[in-house]
Structures are given as structure tokens and as C-alpha cells.
Image (cartoon, rainbow, N blue to C red; front, side, top):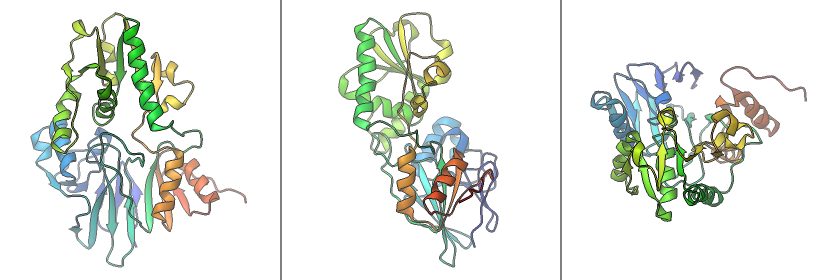
Length: 323
């Protein structure tokens, strides 16, 4: 029997296996290279693209501890068979399927989306007996606009700002979101300027077959006429001037988001699955039991139970419904 608990990551105590542990472990599986899923483990398993992104972000010493595993390739950890499947989240992101000798299987999604993006491998969904899934947007009000409409909205925001003599500045996280934004902007022919943390990762995308548009290095004194892409942490460094600011975030679906982020707009482009995608994902995996982690865990688990699925929040805050 596979058992699992959440302790700053996912832990399978029967085998001593950690997945996405936030503190250094002797051995762990890393689903992708975002900082809240990575630690300086003595050894870790990840896709080659994730290891290369870790090299850019944390240095050679951290990356050299990685063991590269291709999607669909089997890795034996004690009695357990481990396979990685594309998660559709960011470059190199992986869902982790673990199978015991009995044939019982567990699928850990990490962060994922089922919509096809421009800067991530398309998702491939395996079946499993136990599903441990993120539920960041696990409430019915979180349904994203059609991809084509959202891409057009991002381009229009930039074109309108430039036409008004302002500098359009898009705040997007350096790994994944920024590259998706750059690919969306590429057909419009804008002069693109990007922060060094974004530009440092772009060659990794090129290495794995995602051609990235040319970008100029960030220059606060010469932004006029450019579309500028920055990580949100850099906004405090922006000089006073005529610019139009947009946060790129799925939380833009909330009416209060513009005031919370203090921007001119929040454009709801996300690298996570929305509510409808989460439901459809469960249908495809067809698990015996679902555990939810991150976000609206209890709410989404309750919705699944109402649909006849045995589902529970791993954070342990479920409330039993009186039926």
C-alpha cells in the first residue's frame, strides 16, 4: 500500500521517497524548477530541462546533483518504479507516477495545466489508483478565458499603451510565465526588452526546441518604444515615467486583483489548471482516491465527493457533508 503525507513536500514513508521537498534531503524527485519546489538535495531526480533551469538559477553545484530522467523512462527506487510525464506547466515540468510491486500506482501532479501553451511541453496524462493533485484554482469561479482571446488581450494592452506614448510593462515570473508572454508577443513585431533573469533562461528554452524572440537587455533609461517584461520583484526599481503596468496572473479573474497588485490591469494568463481543467483531469486519470494539495484543497475535494469521487484534502481541513 502506498501512503503519503504532506510535510513541506510529498513524502512516501514506506519507501522514504520525497517529492518536491522544500528542505534538503538525501534523495528527492523535483517536478520543476520553480523555487518553491526545489531544495539543495544531495541527489535528485528531474527532467534534463529542469536540471538545466536549476543550473541557471542556483548554479552548477546544485545542478550536478541531478539525475536526468526522460519523460516515460522508468527509474527504479528500491521496490518502486518511478516515471515522469509532461505536466504542461513550464519547460521540463513533470508529473510523477510511482508504482509499487503490487501494481498499485500513485500520480503526483505537481503544478500542471492541460491547456496547450507556447512555452511548455504538452501534458500527457497517465492513469493511476491514487491521485495527489494541486488545486490552486479549485473553485468554480476560476475559469480562464479562451487562450486566443487572452493572447489578443495581452497584445492589445501593449499596442494601446504604445499608441498613447506609454511604455507597456508586463510583470511575469522569470521561469515559464515570462517565456509564454514573449512567445505571445512575438507575432506582433514589438521591440522586446526583458530582465536578465528572463534572458538567462531563454537559451535553455532554445536548447529544448522552443525558439524565443530576440530581447534587448533591460535599460530603464531607454524603455521608450519597447514592450518590457519583468519579474514582479523588480517593479520597485521602475523609474518615474509614462508607463502602463500589467500583472500577468490567473488571479486576475478576481475583481479585487487590480487593486491588490496596484497595476493598471491584471491579465489572467496562468500556468495552472483552472477549475474545469481540474475536473476533467480527474476524469481522465480515473483514480480510486484523490488527495488535494495547494490552494482550495478542501473546497475542491468536497466538489469531487459530490461528483462521487473519494477525495480528501491532504492539509486535513475537510468538513464532512451531511447528505
